[in-house]
Length: 117
Image 1: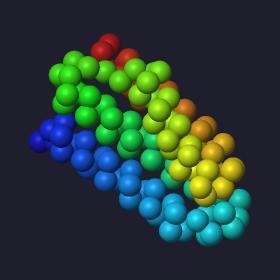
Image 2 (image 1 turned 120 degrees about the vertical axis):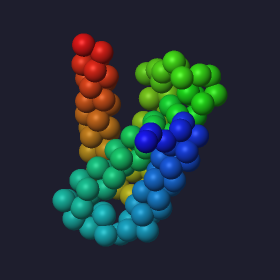
Image 3 (image 1 turned 180 degrees about the vertical axis):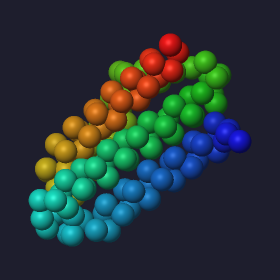
Image 4 (image 1 turned 90 degrees about the horizontal axis):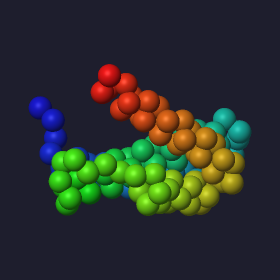
């Protein structure tokens, strides 16, 4: 059974907040070595994915089921917020988080395009 847009919005927003809180809680450990800094960037990309899911579900709940998130306002804003979350940890987290987030977004677009075929 699939979750409704409202419950999915709340759940993904909660995940984003928990990821951000854990990034802040383990800030010193994440910036202590190179592999952990890359892991911090990956956590930042998960913040991006969960924020984008939350925003998209909120808009679908507000504007109807056929509403889709667009690149400029929604995706760019969620990417900017997740990069700010990464910047609180380490500057390399911003770079790796940006690369992982773009890869996730391209992968989701690829799945959406091939789902219709």
